[in-house]
Image 1 (tube, chains in turn red, cyan):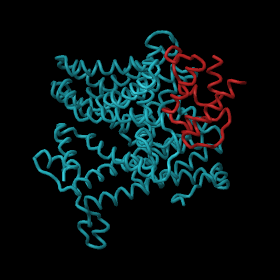
Image 2 (cartoon, one colour; image 1 turned 180 degrees about the vertical axis):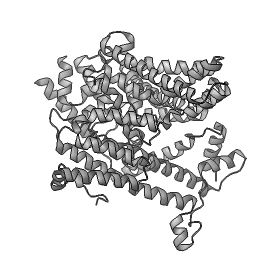
Image 3 (tube, chains in turn yellow, green; image 1 turned 120 degrees about the vertical axis):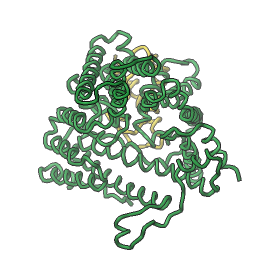
Length: 78
Length: 489
């Protein structure tokens, strides 16, 4: 639960940075819907690398896995 | 105030569009807006959209049939003319035997890619499965280099160039198919075909996959009848907006360079419309190459006109493709979206040609970012940006313009790219710096600062655009002289 909250807060802050203050649910797509640009996801990558020690070069990288809170939680679960 | 009514937000309209009559009305509006925008194959596009509209469950099958239709009947992007000239020069047949050979190479390439996709799905741990796009792109450029450097003659030369002319326009579509195959939930192999140069690429001759590939389209596919109706209404709305901009493009072009119009000629006997007499960029280069110099206002007018025309033209062709994609039920983002609102260089790049930027980000930026300089965050970001905006940009254009290699050989073709290389280097370094600054100073700006930032961004791209010629006729010195003359009183 703490991870989900942390990820949600991080994504909220990321959206606020680009003047997007609309709410979103855990399953809402953020990249495919255009709210986050693929280039913004490097912030998500950094966050996951630093806080969860995920090595995307090692495990492979799929933008869809960072598209929503749920997708990121699934990624962390794996 | 919206110029185009937001019909996709009207509940009654959305409900109506889910009925048979509503679907027919949406299709009629789609066809009408295609005709308004003078989209040549409007009948075929409407037919594919109609079948998908009434049988959404068969969407993937129709995508495949649509892609097959365009491959058989309207395959201008294959540039068979270049290979036919090579066959002629090599004393080979250019009649039905050539067409048969081209067909065999095409089928062979698709079978080869299908086998590669299957391999990526099954053998997940091999190097070629973990880095399939790297293998594909390196393979393509190795063949291109071999064709341009080895002393090939006769049938062998024709076959190699047929292979290149088939691979080049499909290269980045194959790249997306391979990326999808490597993902956790790949599309079935047999339906991948529909996403490889899908029907909505229609008249858009570019090699950039609009709406990327199966992985992205799966994410943005309309899941309910209501969702489908909304996305189709958005498609028609986009085509109406494209028509507004296409009209603006026409007016702007005439106002800048003059021209005639049959209707005006007939009604008012106007032979040449009043205009500012701004020369085209090609004419300006011709004059610069001959040692001449345009008066400053004309030179700046030329830069402005070139930039606005390129922008409007890209907006029109790219978003017609996006609209057709939306008619098939995919919430694809626009290819060009409010570029004048950009406040940073990277933001403009994102808004100007979205799917080209996505291609570079996906196949160049992230692979570099995820692997190199992890302990040096700023260098990491800068290197990844250079790898996308400079290296990826150059590779894409070199592969797209493969006919240069056929014409003058590999190394001379490389040297022809000096202007493009300068463009890509400036672009990469500038976006890299913009990215670093942007990460450091993300804060809300006042209106005057926003306007100033947008103006600076637009000026930068307008000037940079003068280094992005399509014809590559003049050497770098001509481009530099032209630019220098812009700031000389």
